[in-house]
Length: 251
Image 1 (cartoon, rainbow, N blue to C red):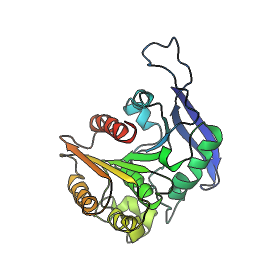
Image 2: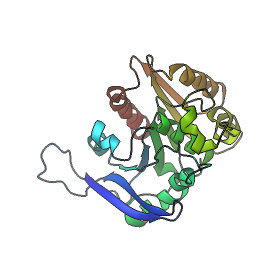
Image 3: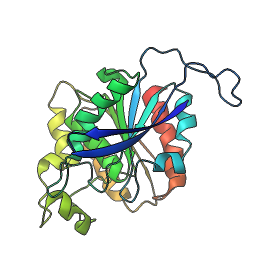
Image 4: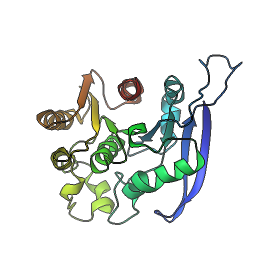
């Protein structure tokens, strides 16, 4: 695998951006501990989103995502969403449009990745889990599957209230178009729907909201997978569960 630090100008955000990308290397002969290279013409691509207090570097720093991705021969793109909840913010920048529209186009300009829907995936943890499931539900034409780990499942719950003011404005007037429960019902009416995965720890402070969202998906017509086990809102849990996500997506 190769690690790419890609810096570029985002027209959507009006500023320079940086993403970390791990992508298969064609030949790794002689490299100890690596299974081998990949001869794919265009790689499947996973967009992997961080949580509220982190940035685009965190998945590489806290997990073995590069090693896990090598087993499947996929590209993993790790962008920065700041504290936007991956939303076109009321007082800020258009991070949803950036992640779902501009970034896939830019990545395909520079790297050998497939732009086909069936080869494009999105996942994330906590705030990033919310962003990933939201992106998959709102843009099933772009992402064939979305996965949330320890997801901020109920954006309308009384959590993160101060943080959400720049995102949605004073009074936290959150439109239905940003609510996962509403989006699950609306996207369910469409012919094109993404596969959805949710995973959460039973000791996670977001556990109850995740269970409610799970029940919503199960009541609708989705290809839906849910997994829970003992664990909290920690990197030990997320390092374990990103492996389940990759197996679910690419296994």
